[in-house]
Amino acid sequence: MRMAFARREVLAGLAAAPAMGFAPAGAEVRETIEGRPTLRNIPRKPVGLVYLFHGTGGSEAFATRRHTRILTGKLLARGYGVAAAPSGRRTAPVQWDLGSVGSAENADIAYMLALHETLIRRGEIERATPVFTTGMSNGGGFANVFGVGALRAGLPVRAIADYMGPIPAAARPPAVAARDYPPMFLVLGENDGLVSAQTVGDVARSLAEAGATVELHQPREQAVSPATFGVIEGLGDEARRAIFQGLVDAAVLDAAGRRLVFRDRPVLGRPEMAELARMIPAGPHSRDVMDELLIAWSAHQMRSDFADAQLRFFERHRGR
Image 1 (cartoon, one colour):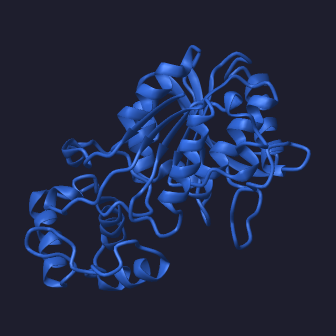
Image 2 (cartoon, rainbow, N blue to C red):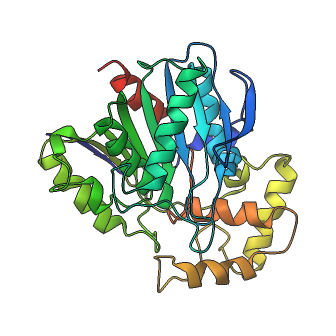
């Protein structure tokens, strides 16, 4: 059994992280393949290909979101390719199918395997190119499902990264032997009210006890400061201080950056998130501000402060 469990602070350096575009490595390509829009950036002779999977209600545009771009910027700089497509279900609930790891039963698995074959046929990747998955929420669950299903189909799957997603029953024992599970990099939120960190953490621990490799991170809630908003493009020091002061004035935070809202219910579900959205002062960056608050509070939100750790994890398992 190999399992690393880490609780740590949001990196102070995150505030200074650059706003990454989806490029720089190769040419960014937007293309409809077999009826689904895809978005990819694959350098010549990539060291690996990372498939990105969106959460409920999302699309391939997950690849262009701020914290995903910070992550993909690091991957691209190291020579990885990245690719994203939407789930087949496009009516509510817009989600990936987590019910099976087999392509005969799961149209999303079948589509992704076909997309992979298309990229091989076009010469963008080789059959031996290492494969990785990364997803958030429902997409984190599908990162597990596709990782297991693709490995069973013969793809060289090297690792999975699941951000606040479930570990679906179809992709864990007894349906899948733990020894056959790709190494998993898992990030959970202690105050996530949509996907239970306790439940997913227990499943991850049982996988590790059965022989799977799991690296689990569960950051704790942090106080907010003007630097919290440093990843929002186009904001200078004065604008970040103004956003912070606006949240203090709205009684979302106290002067020390500790949250004042939902003190009696720290786990943030959909009702709390909807209420928080109404409390944040209106402005061009109000949605971005909410995202950063949810990250600081260790709630349900894609985050990039573990990007370096994920890259190290992928590098460690790329050649296995």
